[in-house]
Image (cartoon, rainbow, N blue to C red; front, side, top):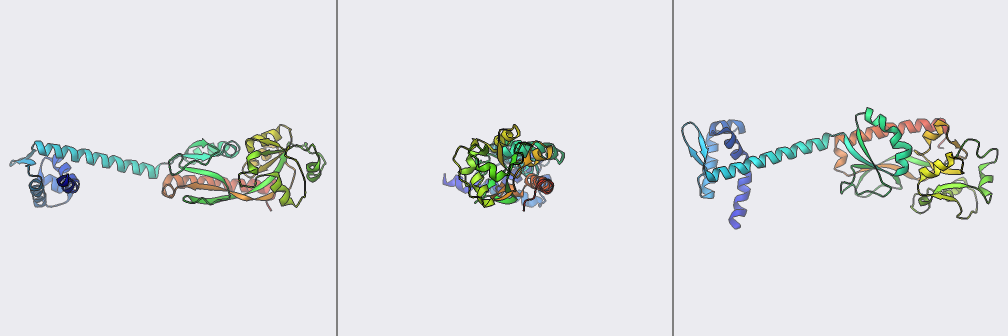
Length: 312
């Protein structure tokens, strides 16, 4: 074992030389391939044979032939060289590929990312949208990047803020009528629709946060119509069930299409949208292409917001 430990580094170092000799079957051509002197090839092979205690090549005036021991080592060197070349190809593909898995929440996927996928394809991105409401483990390779809604930043990850969120009451056009939103919210039977997780996930995506932001002292019971996802609450508002608490990225397209109407002033949220990845992935061409596309989409969202409502 001790001899193996001593010889192994030497064999690894000699692997390119053995591979070149095996394929060229000539010391001179192997030397030219590696950019070294022919005498250096002969010297290194002789030293290696002495260390191993066996001859590796039968020399003739025209060509060299590997011995049985030489064939064993040359075969290992060729496999090693092929493995490293394949690894380098995979590394190149990893760095330059514009195909990646993007993790987003179900609400962000349905209301923003999926409608924008055609533009992603037009930009040359091949996005696999992974819809998952939990925080995927980017370090474990569950996705290459993610769009997250929260307070951020995220320790151990490369994260950059995209957009500060605003809370925005929305309803089907004509639902509220002439009644001011504040008066409606004070009514015992007010139908206020919300994502129930926003009250407990630390993001402040809740009617309580909205009322506080407006300076309204409104008491209400927990009979607010709660949904498992924000996009479901918004869809219920489109269906005329009540007034949904929407937020940035989730309502702009429906507002522009006329499915929804803003029925109250926006309130800035404590949370933001973030684009996150691992530090290693941040250097890849694929992530940089994703980043450019996302920022272009955010610019489009900001333009929509300036037409549809004031973010203050």
